[in-house]
Length: 149
Image (cartoon, rainbow, N blue to C red; front, top):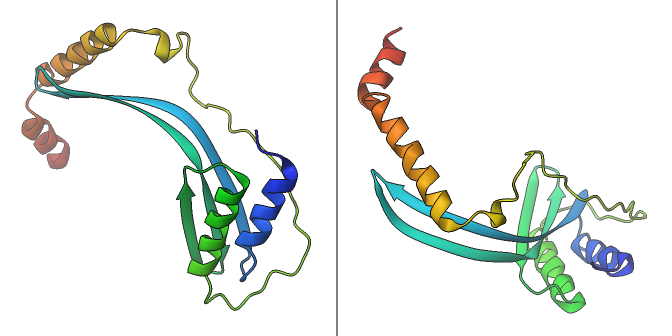
């Protein structure tokens, strides 16, 4: 976890050339993507996403800059880039920074942690889902019926 003082410096840098609001979004997650077309598995991709985004808002303008460098210098450089991209903002932030940290809670409840399920079982479920969707009827016919009523 990053220290609060460093995060305050990052927010200050993001607002250094103006702005109404700035925030830091930090993420560290694993993703699994399984592509299925008809009954065929076309690819399995796993990726680890770890980095931070700096969002700066000024009036109706906004910028979002992302970095994988979570060092103090990397975050400050990212915030500086965001500030530069929003440099035509006429409002200069001169107040104190109201700082709060919040951890986003996952709104999706789960009984089994997804990473504890093997790829084979996930592929079986994906194939069953694909088969059920395809056996529900012709997509064009279903769409036509929905538009007709």
